Length: 76
Image 1 (tube, rainbow, N blue to C red):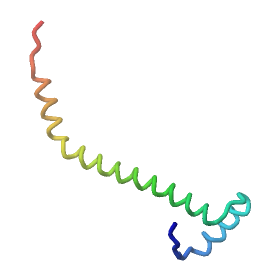
Image 2: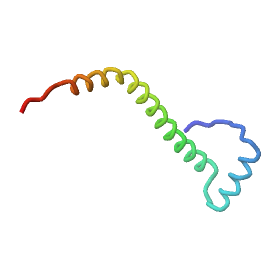
Image 3: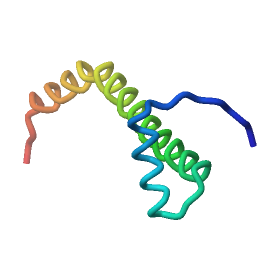
Image 4: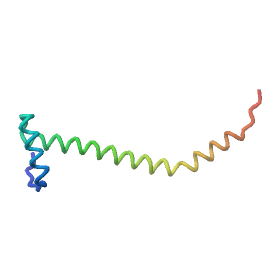
């Protein structure tokens, strides 16, 4: 486990302390869980951004293939 020092805005600290009193949870555990949750969100946003970027790369090819299929005359 790593030890870090961080500065927290006073308003965030006060609100966090109030919540911790009600939850009866150690501050360290609460912060670890908050960071884990935030990391999950950030990983999803990174994947979303990558998928959008890759989708744009193949967009023109996909449209071209679709157009080719539309031009095919099917015979029964």
